[in-house]
Amino acid sequence: MSLFDRRSLLILPLALAACGFTPVYAPGGTAAALRGQVTVQDPATREGFLLLQELETRLGRGNGTYALAYDLSITEEGLGITRTGDITRFNLVGQVDYTLFDFATETVIFRGTTTNFTGYSATGDTVEALAAERDARARLMRILADQITTELYAQVTLPAS
Image 1 (cartoon, one colour):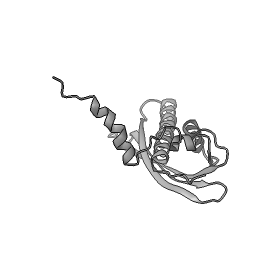
Image 2: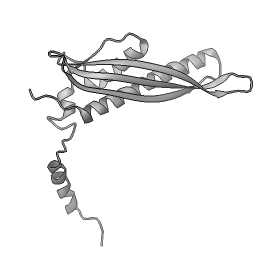
Image 3: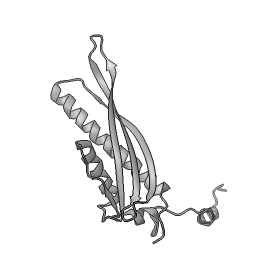
Image 4: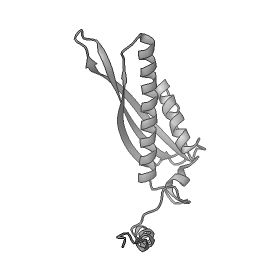
């Protein structure tokens, strides 16, 4: 005899609906409401361009209904140090403070901050180290864009149209 009862799966959607749960990707969910509606601020740096590219991949290119402004900062920390004092490993720590607002009324809908890091090795020649750093910066922007999108989908309550 199995301890698993398939009838309990039939009750789960009803229980979730009763507690106010709405699937993000369902028709009428936050993801559908934001898709193609968010205009991301113009980038000022290469990393800002990568962040914009990643956000537009997830949210679609906006038509001006909502605007997303952000402040991106990246710090580099040396981790692995040899006996001679050479740094062989770096962490890139990125932080994005962002605000989603209604483009027409300039009403703030959501403010958030997200932070994450990625690392790269600086061993080898200069070309290898520069390529590793560039790749790490691109990975960091992908991670931050994922976090921003997830927070927007989970936290934003859009005004009724």
